[in-house]
Length: 417
Ligand SMILES: [Fe+2]
Ligand SMILES: [Fe+2]
Image 1 (cartoon, helix red, strand yellow):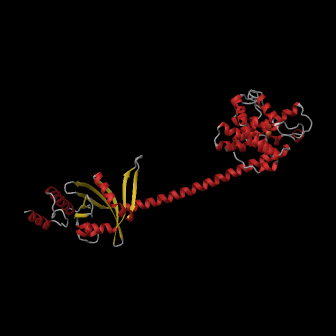
Image 2: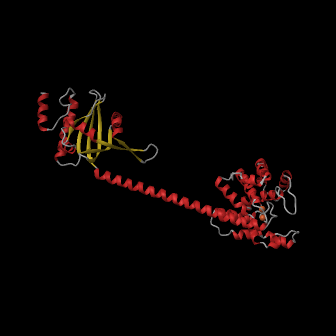
Image 3: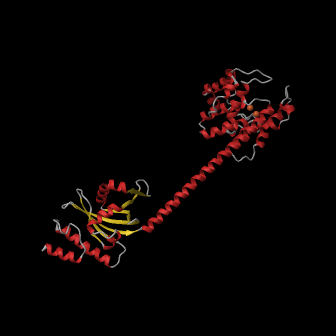
């Protein structure tokens, strides 16, 4: 009876599978037969879908087709259904699968090439069994021509028979994938150009920084030259200030700006007449007032600069003679109204002036100069900066010692900030 039903079925529907003629439960056979009837009807009405039923044993072995429509067979080179699974496997060259990311709502695309597919076939099958469905895109190459097929399948496991069935529908998406690939290519190209552009901008920004620094250095040299000072005062000053800046908690970039802005503190002296600036005898009160004008002249000289470096340099030029108690010049600003850079330079500038020899005075000893800084704490100087200065005396001392050994040696010290 069973055999008769089977041959009747086979006469009416194309069948080259195993289950209907094998020792399987009637439930399973009924499921296969009914699905084949539906799929055949679907194909007859001209659906663009290529339906199939694939099957495999849950305890291992090759996949086979219980059903594959005429069009799928044609697409794979007119192979018999019994050869279809093997043909599909042999001609498969890529597999895309899509899943939602673990931490984001982005769709993650996994691409497997032929070697990876061959290696992970068993794993992919287990995953499909676990999730009860599978959604992938395959690239199949038939007679040298690539076809992309989207595969949507429902997976059912029949525990008793240890059979897994995949009720699938393939749909050709060659044009869609090509479009996606060309979009990806374009996107990659855009990314590449964007990166190049970023590099170019970065390079030009660096050039601009270098050029700015160069101008600043030359301006500083000009001021030092007028003043009759060596550049060592500014070198030491930069280093002292950056020790304090770092101890204060300035980030590397900010401290770099401080380091490079500090040498411009006296740039306004460029505007003071030689007869006053280089006067050997003591200055009259009027001349002293003119000298004091170097802060505002420096401020004017550096006015309107767009860069952070010039802005800090201007703040330093304007405020390095202001005092914490408001007794300084040019504005008599008190406390934290004086910019931080100005408060740092104020201490280091006085300390370096004290420890340096000048035509009118001997250099003070290191300890004496430190005492003087402490004496002026809270009147001339910000107590917080004085505290940092004292806490970092060993570092300050290193710069002081290195310089007093020999100027050349000092030059060889890397300009660490
Ligand atoms: Fe000054
Ligand atoms: Fe100075």
